Image 1 (cartoon, helix red, strand yellow):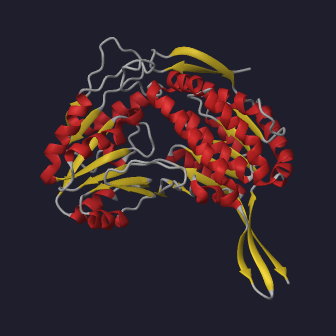
Image 2 (tube, rainbow, N blue to C red; image 1 turned 180 degrees about the vertical axis):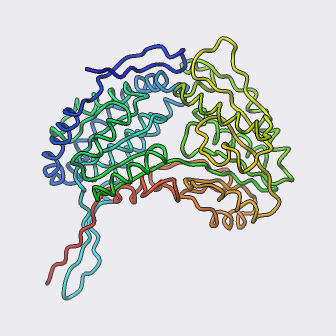
Image 3 (cartoon, rainbow, N blue to C red; image 1 turned 90 degrees about the horizontal axis):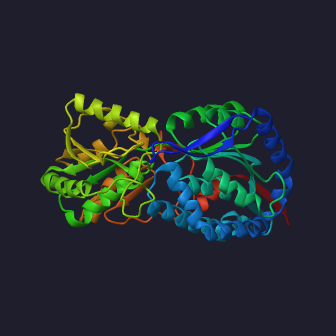
Length: 458
């Protein structure tokens, strides 16, 4: 059987382990078993499903350190961030478990002397769930458990960049008492995901690039099935001239450079008022230049590597394009001379023009282009100058202005000022090429369901 090799991008691509790539017959068998299981899983109701899923959540808690270590080895993410990923998404899983009944309970729309009308949320059936590599545990939680709580059965594909994290998640889930066929996992690259989505399924759940998401949307259209797609982003951060620089700089830094910038909802374009541009840029520059990059398992390191060499190559191409078109490197974090792997320096860029790839493409790595503005209208136009619309941030001590600007930015989630919480109760998704549908929150659970209306005569 063909093997999928897992390598450590922060250790010169040394081999960590391997899994079997799922052949066509295995994919077909798992989809068939899922179809056989979907009626009984639906009829178990939310309370019964949650009862079976809670022990899985508890084992994730017990094995937090083991999962985090594997995330760091496969993705290059520093161990502190990997641990935070596991902890945070266990908390989100807990929210899903505790709020599933509330989100999916029947809703009475009419109750008069003639009749009773109610909305019933019912599962679609078999969900093909495909997750990315940047949060391999977190996106497994998002892609698997809301679907199971809603009553869908799941055939899950983890990213080919982190198959061992996916394998560990599968082993933990299947060590508990789920009925056969309710959950299964397949392994491989895009061809395996394509085969899965072309199988006898009822729903596509996907988080990943816009290009792949659009392809899956066409597949869903051909099959005439539901698709929930969370895709790329190029989030703007608009900073007005009345901000607190001391507060703003570290928040902008963290918003752009966490996990080496490999986050769909990261701040990817910094739009600063001319009056404070120099001061704020200098403050961020100082943070960038004192970062330590190296072995992600070393707690002394601030940042690790990119997930793969292909990401490193793409970022170099995007950076070189900007330099060739006149961009200036304002700051870069120094890389150790003896470092080997998919490492890339944190980079601030100024003198940005709209024809540069760093402006009009999603930059999935630690490059931050900086532009300036004079008027509110100009800031809004710059913020919306993108095909994406996942998120944004607006910073101004004038809350009325911040609210006004936020209302004119085309994005699914907008943060004002210094708040930085990302909560399971809030629906998440984008405008434009950033996606279709919503994840998380009550809306996200309902997104995974058919809506049926039942009318009863009195």
